[in-house]
Length: 64
Image 1 (cartoon, rainbow, N blue to C red):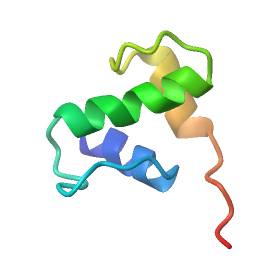
Image 2: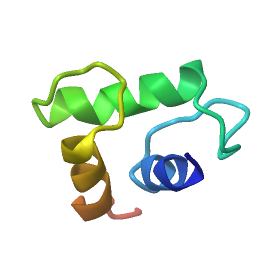
Image 3: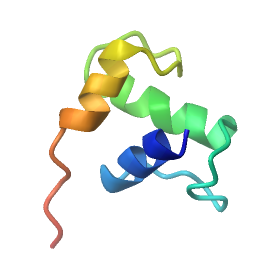
Image 4: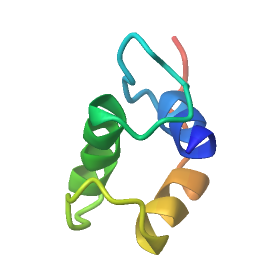
C-alpha cells in the first residue's frame, strides 16, 4: 500500500494528515478514485491492474 500512496502523492493527490502510512483508509481510497475518474477508469477506489499501470506510468506535473 505504501507504494501506491507514494505514487499518488508524487502525482499530487492528497492523502490527508496521515500521508504515506501503508494503510488503505478513506483518504487513500479517495486519492485512488481521483486518477481513476480523470483517466476514465471505473472510479471504485480499488487498485486494479489498470489503476496500477496509470499510477506507475503517469508523469508527475512539473513544479513551478
